[in-house]
Amino acid sequence: MAIVGLRIHGRQYEVACDDGQEDHLRMLADEVDDRMRTLVRNMGASPGADMAMMLTALTMADEIIENRKENKEIAAEVHRLAGLVNDDKHMGQEGRMVEIEQAMATTLEEIAQRIEKIADQVEMR
Image 1 (tube, helix red, strand yellow):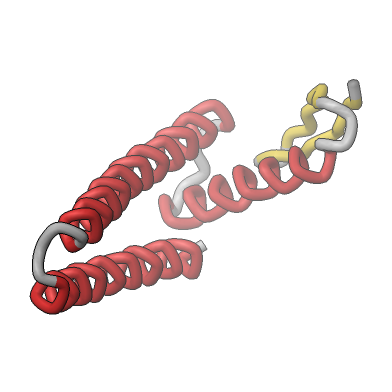
Image 2 (image 1 turned 30 degrees about the vertical axis):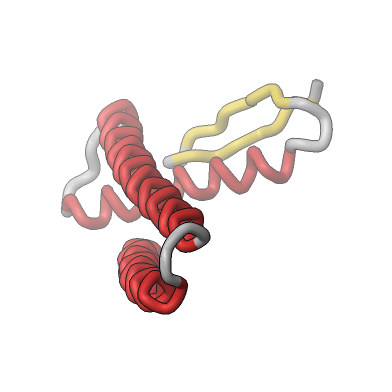
């Protein structure tokens, strides 16, 4: 078990982690610290450390929930496309291939839009 010193929002923390996970933990702490600095800068006032930590956690939780929802939508679309491929074995292939290609193009466009949205969020930090 390793102990890692982390600095978040100007405060020092000592956190235990599995051996070999030190760099990953530092990367996570840097992400939290970056988000907190961005939040404080955008608020125009300096909230207390507890308030800043809570607001940062809420922001990150919101992103996690949105990403989970998007992942479920993508998984459902992949499942639907897999069904089309399976149906294609039993039906005329030309018509099905056109339908599959159109569905895949739509899905790829949606994924590209989601990637752009995530990239915009990262750039804002």
